[in-house]
Length: 276
Image (cartoon, rainbow, N blue to C red):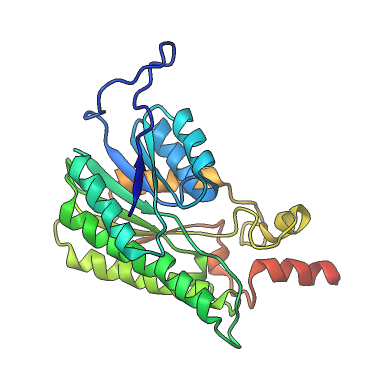
């Protein structure tokens, strides 16, 4: 089952005391929020005045450090590969968050396999964590959460949904699957206050087995030849949560990478370029 760790809310830091539950703050759950893009998203919402529920699987220390740094936050532990636990997490939060407006599904499994052969274990984990659990949590959220002015689900996908290559095969399949779910969920929820979005980042942080030089080289392989910042994804998520984009829409944050036709993942393109 999900384990909820209630970090101090609205800390009066001089006295080290917590005030009452922040009923005057909109709440957001960010999965995979202890580090990487999830942490950037959590920070953007926290600094904008939201109460942030920071989900993590095994990064308890990083999650707590982030929660302590935000004005209003708590942490929750759950392995999203266990869909029953993911559902229980949503049910628990829905029962006590009085104005729960947004879920951002940022947690993701990114493990290598390729088009010549699916690795069964990699495929199963990618599909559960990257597609099945997010879709299930979205369904539960829309059925159970109470919110003032409507609810929104923001699903992190990948620019690979438009610029597909054969690397990280199971991961890419799972992102295509959950991207399809975004469109289906958007059509199923006809209340205009409820919206579902796909947020598709490009190469932003070091991934897989990259070193610093490879990261720098690969992250400018986009249309603008610039490195996209993690904070840009956080700002984009905040825009989707507070703005008026049509439900079902996809917002790319990748400096135009999705407009290219790249034959391989940029990890390997950068390595090939370095050998030339």
